Image (spheres, rainbow, N blue to C red):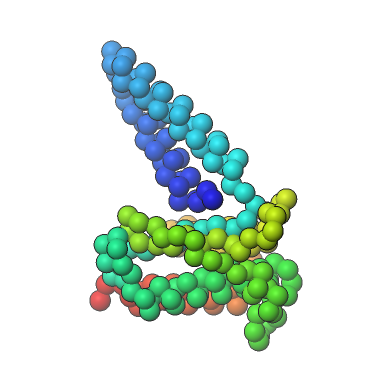
Length: 196
């Protein structure tokens, strides 16, 4: 599975190499050749990764700060609550997109089952989890509802945490209040474990 984190890292490295090329002097021929070769290699890898993104959901949740001990451990209570809130967020978004999320009451069982994600591996460097959608016998031809929900929630999290108030206000117009309340709970768990 290609994670957004890996793809973003490749794009960031490509941007850094482009900046180095722009700063290299005309007399530094060997550096230019080496940097251009690296940039071509990165662009090819990015294109291959984007073509291989698949149609099932996958996301990396990476943590830093107080709940994390280096790159080797994470507070179990924090991790459990965060993963539970994230799973609930995805379930509610899947139900909302399918028109199954009512104003109150439990999220429909079929939406919860469809949105079920599994921890596939750990992320090291800081600490985190790679989550993937439970796969069917054959991957769907088009993006699954869970993949769409994960992308929507990722975009929502970026807009809500951005400095751009226009993006935040626009999101508030379109978001379901139950999805927003679960997102709020997720962020509150981050704040409670932040620096004291």
